[in-house]
Image (cartoon, rainbow, N blue to C red; front, side):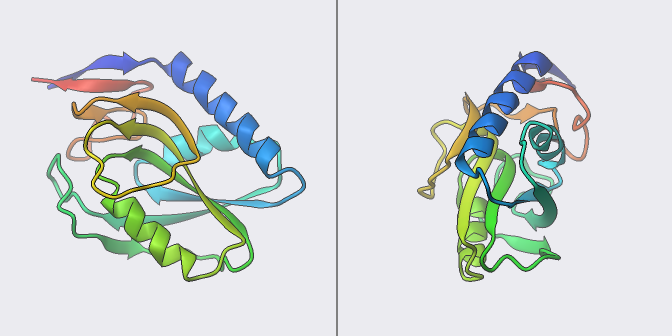
Length: 171
């Protein structure tokens, strides 16, 4: 299998720079805690953070709803919780891709009960036509169709995360 480029590394960098600028403006004078959803968001978060010109801290959560499948199971498991307390803090959840929204919806609910000062979402990709949970995503870079995408942190069975672009799987 291989992946045909869909979104170039240059396009990704340009959109993350714009997203970082917006976050910098929206949180001026505040500290921000970026929460990366592992494993896919690590590349997005690292590059996005370089474009945010504010004091930032990082934390990570690991959740699972896929297993080895290309479609979400709808059952969410928290594999790694936050190390930091988020009460009273400005939190931005960083995601690589939002498809059904079920995992992110679960994550938002579980973080809201911890009483952050604010809680927003920044996503590299929003997948069109598959949302099953209503979500308010304040920061997003690209919309993609229903095809299965890999690269730039996104994987298929643990592979292709290291591609510098987002691509569509080809047989």
